[in-house]
Image 1 (cartoon, one colour):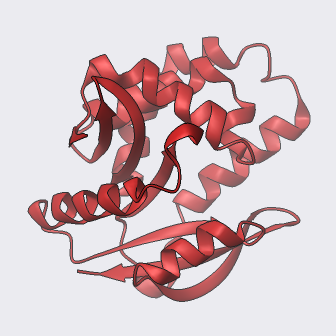
Image 2 (image 1 turned 90 degrees about the horizontal axis):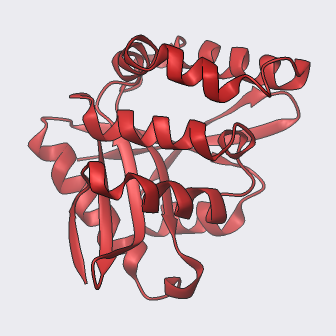
Amino acid sequence: MTIQIADKNDIQQITKIHYQEINQGFLRQLGITFLAHLYRALINSPNSFVVVAKKDKQAVGFISGCTNLNQFYRYFFTKYFFSICFSLLPKIFKISILKKIKETLKYKNTNKNNLSQAELLSIAIAKKFQGQGIAQILLAEFIKEMKKRKVNQFKVMVGEKLPRAIAFYEKMGFKFFSKKSIHQGQPSKIYIYDL
């Protein structure tokens, strides 16, 4: 098993793992093409990174995050605007999707309580490799990378209906900070991790 910072050659495999394993999230509704643009941006932006776990040169899991969420979104929408619009074209006319996009963008612009702008965005392990400690290894590497980038605290938002994810973050030393609803009827918990 190798753990490394992802590059452009990993985008397709990372996107596929996200699409298959993070099946309750809003981003999946935007489609696999949108996800590919998102992970391309996360890999290319100076404000974000993705750590990937590989076995026999195949991605089996990943963790992604950014050092500054607002700066990352600015990069994403500036650099990939036309690609994003094109990939969302079939969905953009659905009011429910437009509403969720607006709610997501509104979340990125709020920073009450002076929380860190650094954030763990996603973590996923391919089903066949779950339960083997890969998530813990990826998180340890993610923390090392955050330290290298001079981050002293980051947050993660977890859906309240995801008890396994909540248990994982609590076991790994994350501290509950507050509750937040980005999308109506879908409460989440914000956890922080101090480095």
